[in-house]
Image (cartoon, rainbow, N blue to C red; front, top):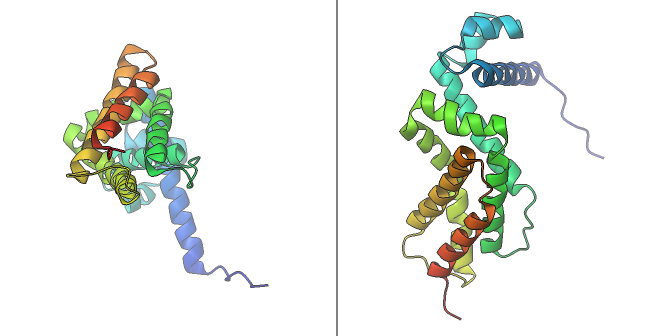
Length: 203
């Protein structure tokens, strides 16, 4: 049996640093949800966490860097939850559709929705928030589309464009659901089917 590597001072220091960063993000997240971005102050968050300014500035030089880090973490976590239950043996398009619908469900949670569609874009600006989300999601979508093409299921003239179209479709559906309070899962599923049909290789 292999002996696990011994914990070193460097490893312990890294773990403490990661714990501190996560603690700060969690406290800022709660404050953003409760008070909004503008009303949240570093002094208040430090008071809640009991951490020092030095600990804060070691990880984030400004509140803008905090919301950038938080928004990226929120995007990654939401996508991670959406894909964790996928069956790797399912066809690529099946996995992609399932992931899109699962993401839609995850994004409807009140706290997640507020960060993704309100706090993040308002604080960062729409373009900056979109760039963060695209950098994380588009490669996953494009990868599954290319897998589907390799399997002979679709023909892609512009895979990046198709990935961007699907990404935008899902995001707009989630935003519409948030604003209207309606469940549009079936409409999104039909729209995804139509998009896939437009790139499908004729049988």
